[in-house]
Length: 474
Image 1 (spheres, one colour):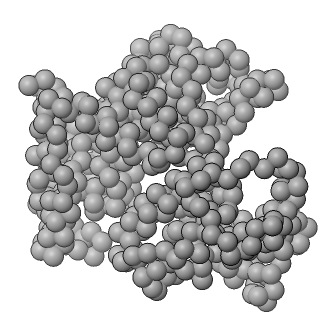
Image 2 (tube, one colour):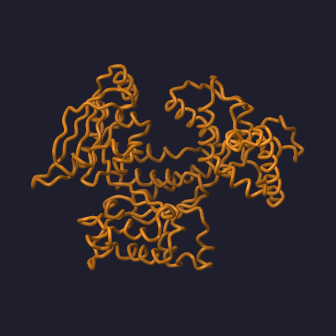
Image 3 (cartoon, one colour):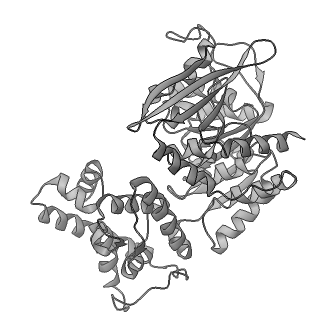
């Protein structure tokens, strides 16, 4: 057997096990996890692989595998309360021939037979995996199909991913916020020959500039005041033999851009406080919702880095330009939230789909997911109706239709894209006017209570305050 066949055999054995099983490397990065364990957290195994084990839990303190990696001692047969159920947990370190810790295995067994039966039924419903000789091709297809959509743009995108997946070239993913750039990045990684290596995500906009260098490249002991004893590995270290995903790359400080350029050119990093460089084997995927070419003109992004990153360019269209995929996403989120909320919502009223199709979705797929999650928080029926939708969404569509010759109740075809509006400025003004009127109406209905108004609008209280400032309604 070659390594891919052995790995597939191990995955098959894990998935037919009745216990939840998880395997991490010496850094705590999840390398293997079976279906039973992933189902406990409402995730797919592919979503968990490549992330740190602490990220699997809402409370990172619940994971003791990092402690087992540190101590090298077994923790066998310990009782543990998980989601109100009593389970038996065992954690065992993995050693190489020289006695060095190279990882750890966690196993969760169940005292609650009903819980075990439910998980076994989920696991047994999985289709039989392909034969080892077909593993590579079948795996690539399955991973690419995680990209939801049958529109022409998405089908072309999937075909491009199939072609470039096993290359090591840098990929730049472009698209508006909420279009699914991380999902696409994971699909590229999981479809490549690096899929058994880690997938490490870095949000370049979320890390303070003063900490970004040490986060990316790590540091040695004594590099700065407060540095950990023994130093700390950086994200590039953690991603060795795998993929690093630099999200929001357009927000990276210019000084850091120069250091990233060196990594791209030399394939090596220099930890903070160290005089020695070290080689890394990492594929870089980057993403942004900003116009990098404009940032170059403004002096906020290095032109040489742009051309290094933009070897392969993947563009994710906004949801409003792929309306024919809307039904697929609605179906996906219905299944997802039925599972998470323990509900059995079976349908959606045609009027709801009309409203969805008529809305511009400025927040794209992320906004649609938030709307669907809100619906599942309040629904008490089998079918989603207009009454379950946020007020702002319904009002926005109905008011905008009053500006057209189309009757408000005319059905919309979900399988056709809307023509591009050439009067963008006029449309923009209409949307703003509608949004302002909707906010005023919500405040009136709630008697001026901003918390209640935000709930009616389906947005956060902080989001409402920003809108109030924007329209001078404070």
